[in-house]
Image (cartoon, rainbow, N blue to C red; front, top):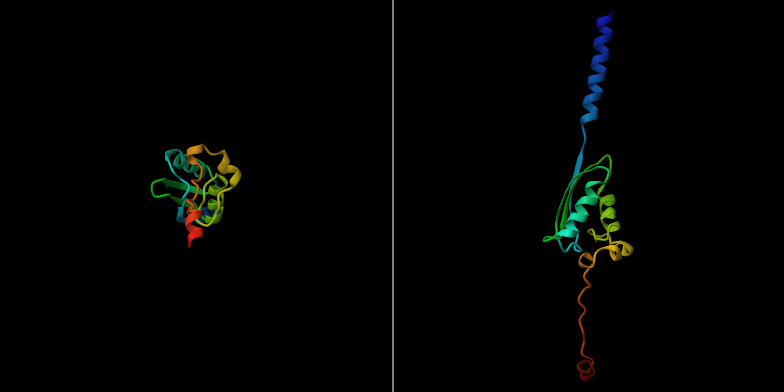
Length: 126
């Protein structure tokens, strides 16, 4: 009788251990056009590396991308993009938080988009 109970308990606990170890992960490459330098790369990697559920981060400022792997039961891609935007960098379709952009070092701030200057004399001549 004791052996039967012990065997049942062992099988019960070993079964729950198997289920506890099955974790699914997600992986995505996020476009971050605001990353311009090594400092930007380090900021993004350090911040996301501390984020709950993120298992790996690889930022590339030359390609302007961040490759992220995360545990799907703890976070999702939208939370990761929002975290990047809250740090001051655009992340795919999520715009950077403007107050955080202002806190970045000058070299790491968004570069203004070039505007096309129209010569007023030329415009009037047409």
